[in-house]
Image 1 (tube, rainbow, N blue to C red):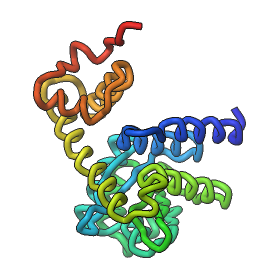
Image 2: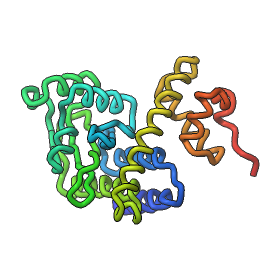
Image 3: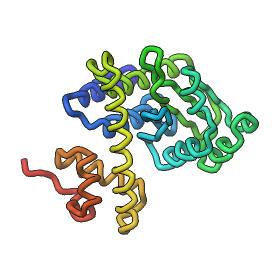
Image 4: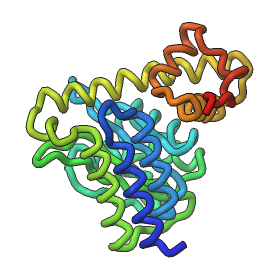
Amino acid sequence: MPREELLAQVFVELADTLVADFDVIEFLHLLTERCVQVLEVDAAGLLLTDQADRLQLVAASSEQSRLLELFQLEAEQGPCLDAYATGTLVAVPDLAAETGRWPRFAAAAHERGFAAVHALPMRLRDQVIGALNLFGTAPGGLDASTATLGQAFADVATIGLIGERAAREQALLSQQLQIALNTRVLIEQAKGMLAERGSGSVEEAFAAMRAYARNNNRKLTDVATGVINGDILLHESARTRPPS
């Protein structure tokens, strides 16, 4: 499928999720997955700032990119943090050449199979609220059109978070950001519980939760809460569809 046609389908799909009371975490995960598909990168991750101006991981397209993003936050170094701090694109086509700049991050990225990173800021006027990060398993830069599309994805993520009203009201923006971060904590707990119960890897557990939420018309937050409380036995019901 030509990229233009695929891009049109993806942005229609993303727009369709921006309804009242939409599932913000599912939206952001879908966005990272579509970044991989459209931009032809190998993984993507999304970081948001909390109310204390600290970056937190909210979405990632793969388990390896999730782990690398978490390491970057723990180590407090990396291109994604720099993009957030400066509000500008940080392009790293070859991480091996940046070991002096981000020694711990470069080593961790290499261990997880990544050789290139491009970090794009999520901006609301003069405020930077996070960063969208694109990872490659081989060295290489983004051409101008791909970088522009990547920034468009970052802008769509910002729009999805704030909505029309929140764009005018700082309090609503802060509230929506905090809801996304709090929801992520619940989901991480549920993923860990499922993995410990022998329901597969952490990545498989998350995929099962998303499938259950979609098949049963439930919010991902509600499914995670149900798993934690023991109300949803996902290994038995994840593939159950509601009656038509």
